[in-house]
Image (cartoon, rainbow, N blue to C red; front, top):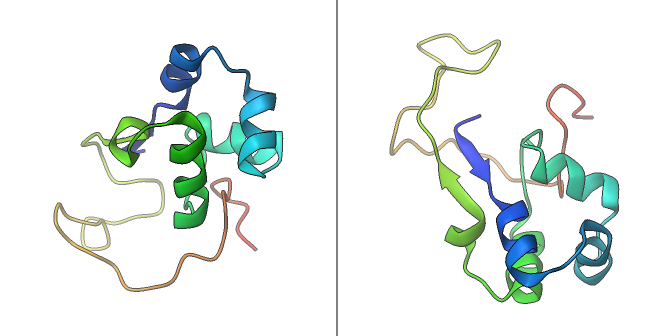
Length: 101
């Protein structure tokens, strides 16, 4: 996945458990696990804001871009290029790849 999530780093710095973070942010531990394990396809800005508030950090402390090959199902023409923005609204907190509904 081109976007890496570094929640584990921030949890270690804050000496906080996954369960405590999920509770303080207001999401389920399962959704937090999907996000921190790199299986999330999308994140609401409200969730990102809550994570940053609880962890006392900036979005860039949690997310970083890693170049990589197109994901399964993407063709070269469909793959998002650096700097490209695809239209569409994000309506989920954390959706595991392949399970969007």
